[in-house]
Length: 124
Image (cartoon, rainbow, N blue to C red):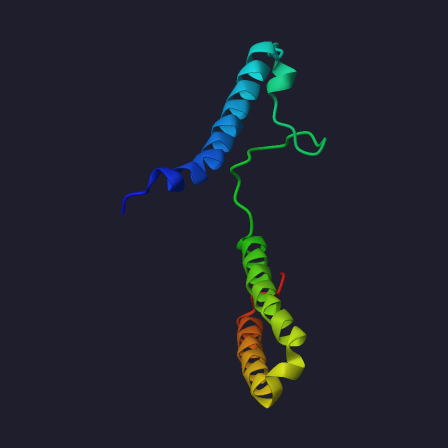
C-alpha cells in the first residue's frame, strides 16, 4: 500500500506535533538536570516514607493476607463494574437482561462464598 502525496500531507501535523512534544520533554529534562541542585548529603539520601523514621529492613516478610485482600478487592471491584451498563440499559434488555444478570450475580456469589469458605478474609 503506497500513500500518495496528498495522503501523506494529512499526517504531517501529527508528526510535527509529536516532534515538538518530544523535543519539549527532552529540553525540560535536560535543563532541569543541568540547572538543578546537586548537593548530596546523608540526610537527603535517606529513604523517607510519610515522615516516619525507618525501622529495620524493608525486605522483612509480611503476611500474605494483605496481598490477598488487595487482589480480591480488584477482582470483585471489576465484577461490580460490569453491573453498571446493565443498570443503564435495564429496561431495554427486558427479561433476557434480568436472567443474564442473575446468572452473573450467582457466579459472583459462588466465588464470594468459596473465598469465605477457604478463610481468605479471616484475620488471625
